[in-house]
Length: 499
Image (tube, rainbow, N blue to C red; front, side, top):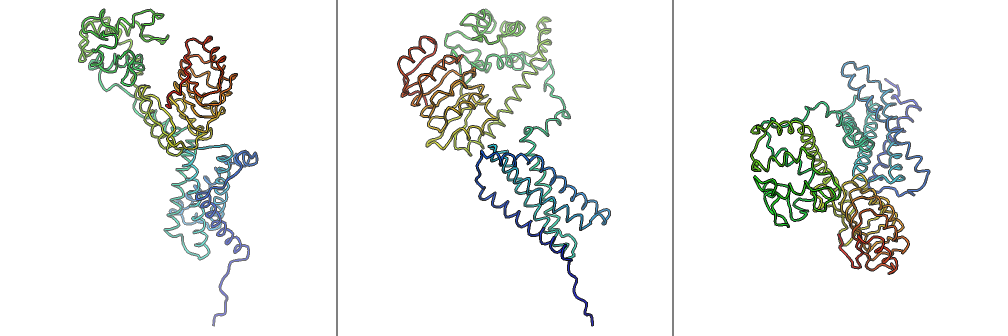
């Protein structure tokens, strides 16, 4: 008769085993609570800031430990001795602990330093998922060791999920720190260099050369959405039409009579010159090519291989590197704009505002405006768009919660042309933040509590042309002073547009 008692774990190992199991369940519960009901903290507390900044220091530990566990199990396929239960339990327990600390520190960092946006959200949820997978993996392995069973497919499944989630979360974290193309950018060097799809002989003088020149020099003012003087320069057909002056931009065979050639040859100080306002005009080579094309009949089908003029061919050869660079830049800008549009649409849906392409910016910039009824939108929400500030040319925050402090962020919108702050709490104290925006031409401050002294900051705005001040407490004396010192700036005592 066998009276031997069943084997039990030594007290220390028994306690350690239950500690690992209990801690894994606790961490999963915390991750779930952070996902379902994030904890509200005092964002200004320096204690949270200090703890949060440990995040980049701690997060490397679980990454290394999880990968080491995975490598050991892979090596065990060749030599089973690599599966050392004591070592693996220690590694999984440590990875679970450091994952927990990294998640908590990351959460404190995002709260205390106001990190926001889709990348931050994706990184946070990825970290919660990774931490959960680590804890479940450790729990499963602990149970298998206690029952003296070999690891099951369920364990290996969660180990695989842990690595996949870890890879995704690490990638998003790297994108937050270094930009979304941080990993992919070096790989571009391995791709074939961009080369023209046509040989030089096959290239069209208008479609491939002159159209690129007009796109980069003229299309900003003469496009489908903004046709200055009713003149379009975005297609061959449009070039042959007359604008407001009743003169055709291009008259085939008559360069001297073509309005386009006449305008680009005017002196820089002439108001009729194209392009105006001191913008760089066409070079002598570009004008020469345009003149040759018009005199040759302004054909859309003329190929470089059909040109026999040695002087023109030499000019084309000299200009070709610039043309190719301009073409690649146009394509890259279009791709970047489309990518930004997708990202902004997601961010706009989260903040309750509307982002649309600016119909006066030739497909290069966006407009931002409040929906009706307006959602709560102040400085904190505005900061979420900081990575896209250079893409905005038109912003309307009418009836929003923005105050003068928000003008600091708006001042970073370097391409901003029209700004509507109607029915906000702007007193004018933050107006100096906007004075360095070179393109700002229109400012709507109607129905705001502006103060007389602060409004005088508008005197330092370089290109401001219209200001709406209806319903403000500004005195007649200040308005008159502005009109005397800036007669070119139109002060309008009407409500003005909402967008």
